[in-house]
Image (cartoon, rainbow, N blue to C red; front, side):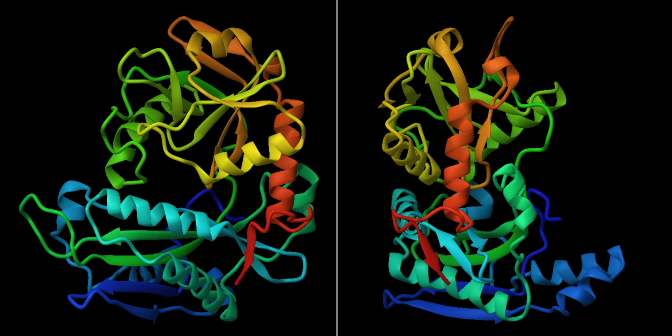
Length: 363
């Protein structure tokens, strides 16, 4: 069973290099591998050596603006196994557009969206042809695909050599893929408010860039050590309004039936799952609002709370702790709306629910 994330990179990888002629030179590379069955039978040491060889890119320079200053960005998207044996990618056009915005926001030439989509599909297809992909399992349906497996695609930018303060003009774009299962571990779904700041107005909070994840990672690990699943960040100016979690957007279903999520400003990542769930909720007749919501309002008036993201999908929160106060939602259980949204979203992704939005693209 696939775990949340692993470095078990699939053999086919993709690189594209921006050239002086404003073209992107694309290369698909087949890394060292055996059959999936042979790899499964290898001992840990042998498998680690094989996987390390797939995670090695000799053409990428060690010292550059990405490794030295965090001047890089990335995406996360998934290909989901279908009952008919095929794989479909969830909204790759949205990832392509956001990736282009992120690169442009970091001063890089944006990667063309059509090339992005085609590269993602081709990487999945080539790995599928040699047996590296999860097969649909009807058992996943029993818990609304909460523990369903998929292919995780990680496209990222990587700068040319450089050691001074500079930006990338001729970057690489790399696509790797891995098997992935549930993001959040089963058990506690408690969250707490962080005292640290994730993003400031006028900064890069809206970009899916490498450096944005330093503070969230540190805070999430501290929270996990104290028995919490997630940490939530407030705004930088008043430290009053909820913004997002460590790697996910957040939603509150208020007691009056309104579903609220923080409005998109330049401190909040425009999540694709966030956007999709707003559409699903509206089509269910749920009133939705994108606005500022204070932590005090959320803790006093919320009856269901959940976080969203490509990795997380939809993960409910049983409680939020802020200093010495704790608010528990729906008696610590996943709520009715959260369950229905999860069921619908995952159903669309795995092909059990009709995709009337055209979100799923075949590879």
